[in-house]
Length: 299
Picture: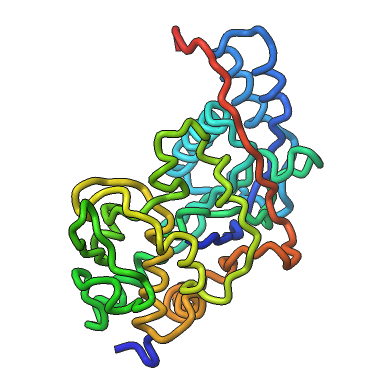
């Protein structure tokens, strides 16, 4: 039993790094060259970049079994960056607890010509849900949480729900599986709209909530999209509700619980909550990417 056992956006600082400029990448894509030619040119531009971090992994000292794997992995990452419009990435791979490859690729800030380095702070966005899931399962292992109990057992302020006139039960198990019927950033009345995902107003909320429970007011009174357990529908708000469950079961603020029982034990010293107001050094700048139509035939 843990002592005093009690979607949110998170950040992570990569360890190590080799920085690489990919300015040529976008130049290639703007030219009339074929997609395949642009792809190869872009990959070569990244791999042959002169930018290097001072603490970059020295590949000449790497054991030979890793060299080919690193080379192939770098090419795959570069191709993914080109195809998906990713301006920068930071990679770190360990084997048996030892770092064997650490590299920063591309830009942390395109507008200001800042390349990725070992200190670049990247948002991990919905990978935060993995941390929340670990916390839920820790509480379940300790016998403090029933995955199939109504969430109101742990979050009394969350209203009971009905669907098609019948009362339904939202559980942690269904929330973990994205099958609880809780909406994402679109309300039930907006599901059929053509509004793009990242143009929803809730993506740009700047209000600071004193607790996870307080933030539930964003969606707690909204209708369910479907009866729990009948359909999969990805939802961030559902995981906000799980965070409130963690607070209710543990008696601790959500962030405090994660710090004490997940981040600190794993020595994840470079990971923490992203907030709007504090100055965060080396934070990567976010961009919106629009995919251009291309003919991929022959690739």
